[in-house]
Amino acid sequence: MAKDKYWLMGPVYDALSWVFAGNSIYKCKCSMLDAPWLKPGDKVLFAGVGHGKEAIYAAERGARVTVVDLSEAMLNKFRKAVEKTGKNLDIRIIHADIFKVEEFGEYDMVTGNFFFNLFPREMIPEVLEHLKKLARKDGYIVISDFAYPQGNPLAKLFKNAYWYTAILIFWATTGAAIHPVYDYQHYMEQAGLKMRDLKHTPFLGIDAYTSMLGQRLT
Ligand SMILES: C[S@@+](CC[C@H](N)C(=O)[O-])C[C@H]1O[C@@H](n2cnc3c(N)ncnc32)[C@H](O)[C@@H]1O
Image (cartoon, rainbow, N blue to C red; front, top):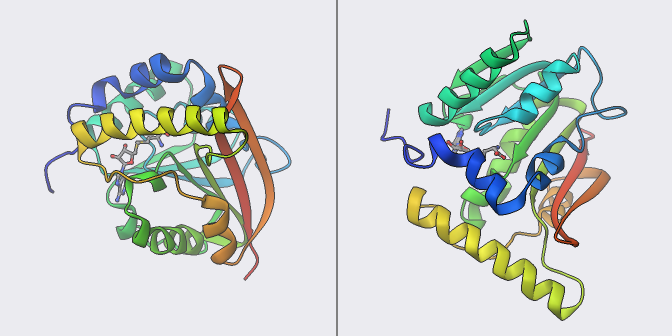
């Protein structure tokens, strides 16, 4: 397997996210993981799970969880966090490129949290199509990420400055592509998903993060 791009970020990712956003990122990632969207017994896949506190949250609520990540450094943290719960949770860990996971039509929900922003713009439809195929018909796709910069000029400026600070850190440490915040709702609609829910999570009084849920109809 290729060199782990997250070897440096892996051990400190969640701590950094805490410094950067307090509890807001975690709250945003959990915002679709309850009824009516996720119920006990549902199968949910987390693409690029990272430290995956939200995957543990879902499993603790009775979901059958599969997590996929390319980074062993990230998955090590995830494994430790699962162990720390001391609970017998239904969690399956796959150390792989998400594109190699071909369990098509298997999942009630597929999530990409702070995952799509790793890819260059031209790849977003392809990544989304792959996650969509992993969901069953009528299943859900969830994208959580930095909020699309809109609102008054000051809010827009804050959101852009906030995003570029984050992406520059990731560019320097993991080689992530530098680009503006993508309009994920547009891509989801373009992929034929029916938008069912959208929730903002504030940080410092600004709607800094968004989680959106679309349903696969065909
Ligand atoms: C920015 S982190 C987000 C982690 C987590 N979802 C969160 O919100 O905290 C992106 C994660 O995606 C993983 N990743 C990147 N490309 C991947 C791929 N092609 N397949 C699976 N995981 C991937 C990275 O290793 C990393 O753990």
